[in-house]
Length: 478
Image (cartoon, rainbow, N blue to C red; front, top):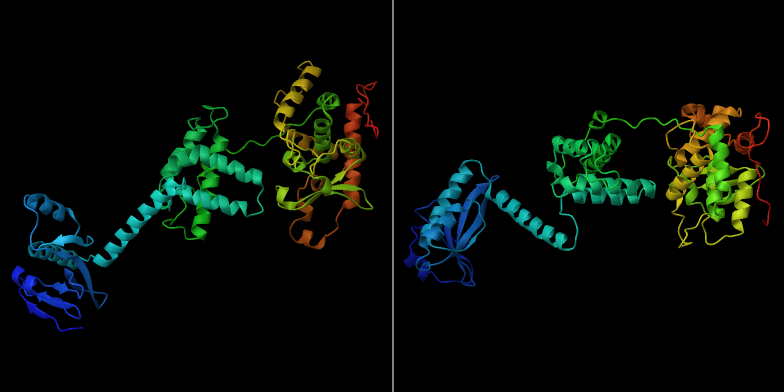
């Protein structure tokens, strides 16, 4: 590097200094750290030199100008004064302005400031702002925001074995309740108070819920807090920018837990249920009856395919893959003779890969289950003249609970009963499960027949003198 001379800088000196083959530098003898440099290209600029982390560093203050436009002196002075000492280089500086900036910068460094780090942080903020504007133009969330974090978590969930229905439910909860209030906020700056306020609004019915607006939803609030907490656990595991803690940790306990349901269909409701399905379309009738006779969850049966039917020496099964099971374990649901009879009748109208294809698109599962249950419940209530043993409305999941209760009533062991509905019984957990690898296939097929017999017992009104409704199996070809 060429040798630098220390001289008191003046406009006359700066004007006559010419460019050379290398940089020409003149240190100001009046202001420590200030240097004037002329590049080989002819560009003239002011630098400020200082020691950073034991090494000498330089930053550019701005390009040199001899004079400023007339009438702009006061406004220019105010503008330069408003800049922080470490501000990026400006387009033009007079000698006196450069000296003033150098003095302010020297005081900033002596106070412990780091102009290089500050400039880099400002550069990153400006770049992030530009990226955020570009993402906003494309309809994407801002970088580092809670919306971006939630989108990354949802993408991760879609790659996991978690069921699509559960992921969609979480996505809807976020879109409805969390993102309107927290989406634009930096994920690392969200506080427990903010999460609490959002969840409390849901619990008190002040959220933007489309279904039953204005109705308190404490269970929904608890679920939302759990989702937010899992999002932050994901962020901490992956060092998401700015996230240092989980603001939703241990907040779920403050909201009401979901009440344990114990609704089952009474014998009278079972008879009315069976009769109500008698005149339904083939697919809907088969769905309702097979759901009761297999103890499956609604969506586990709705998405069933013909290719999932299997047979062995013990009987016929519906092999439900792990991706569709709540437990993430594959399950073989035994099909009793009555369930097979319903499916044989359904096979006559087979269209597409699904057992229960959509009404308008056979390439997708049936979507009418929700409205079908409402219609079926109304028919059951009408058949019983409104004299229900339990005034609470029943759901598809209550058929699963009814099936499990009927298995216990029929004398099935607790282990077989739990395996029948795809639960892992206590007897097969821990070391016991590691040693007992019996598949229980014969026992499960027998349990399926026990369940069908128990349903038949109640449907036919056994023990009541006369059958209330014949338990008819569809004849092949009917």
